[in-house]
Amino acid sequence: MSLFPKLGDTPHLGAVFKAFPQAVQPLLEYHDVLLRGEGPLTIAQRELIAVYVSGLNACTFCFGAHKIYARVFGVKESTIDAMMEDVESAPIDPAMKPILAYVKKLNALPARMSSADAKAVYGAGWSERALYDAVQICALFNFMNRIIEGTGVSFDYANSPISDEEFETRRTRSYMDFGRELGIVD
Image (tube, rainbow, N blue to C red; front, side, top):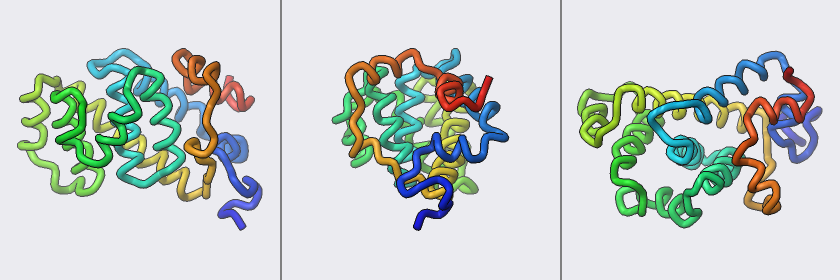
C-alpha cells in the first residue's frame, strides 16, 4: 500500500500536485525564478546543484528528473555520476567545486556553516548572489525531496527513459508549463 492511497501504486509528483493543488502555483513560480531566471549561475550549474542535493538525499525521483535536466543543458551523464562519487576528482568546472562543497555541508550540517565555507566560494570568483542562489537551490531541493519521499512518490526516471522529442522539449518547458499540463495553474 502506498503512503497516500489516493495517489495510486507508483505515484508521480503530478499526482501529488493534482491531489493537493492549493500551494502548487507559487511553488512552481519559485522554481521558474530560481532555476530558469536570470542569475550568475547558468541553468546547467543550477541543475547540477539540484541533482547533487537530490543525490545526497537519495531522492530517486528528483535525482532522475534533474539528471535529465542537467543533461538537457549540457552536463554529461558521466560527469554527474563522477560528481556523486567524488566532487573533487569529477570533471567539473573547478569554480563549481567550492559551491558544491558548501551545498553538501549545508545539506548535512547547516548549523556548522562558517565564514571559511563562504570564503572558499568567493575565492573561486563567485558573488554573494551566486552563493545565495546555491543556498536557495539546496533548500528548495531539501523541501522537494521531503515532499517526494513523504508522499511516497515512486516514479523512477531511470526506469522510464524519455523520448528524444521529450528530451528536447525540456529545454524550453517551464515549471509553470508542468502545472498547466496538469490543469492546476493558470
